Image (cartoon, rainbow, N blue to C red):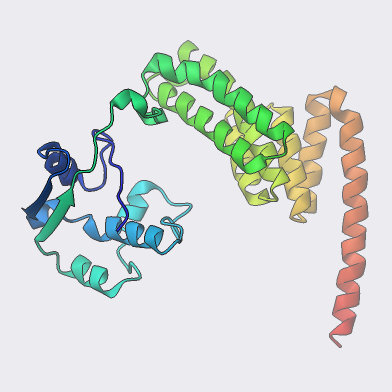
Length: 272
């Protein structure tokens, strides 16, 4: 099989593996018998590893779910032996070989592992990396950078009291990153993703003209004419400097809707 990498202290789904590996010498092969209490997550871990070995996406079918949702998603792994193991958990024997141990500093720190100062320092770096990728029209990669920066800030925000100074300072950094993320999703045609994130942003900041503008464009893209018009009107009301852009968008929307009605009518007549 393929060797895999475990970062000790990262709370891997099978925590027991960290304990076992920490007891081994480099180059050693060892066999460990593990009780049911330590092997509950094995089926899910194994499913992911098998998918990787088959050249598939290990997260296939569990994209938009929280971690807990995925953990308790026990209907089927897609592998009979793993399903059987989930139904009737067994003690397992793991045979492990330790190839090498790397110095922690050799590893690019993940967001979760950073200190408060490191997180704050990472945000402008991620922000400008995202901007650079947008200029190269690499929207999916740019979106990932903006998203990582938002996660850094949200983690810091969780330790502050909502709506107090510290929280608001972080929130003012989050908003433009979310809007940049939405711009990338618009370019990628992920209109529902844009609707979700702009709506969430507007629940907290209902005077953000840019968020209404992006949401209006996403509504227009998925033929929600009434919602798009309402949002565009809000933009012009909140920020008169955007009135010309809004007028242009409303004209385009009108033309697109008329064209769609004509096409729908033709298609409808063609049925009879």
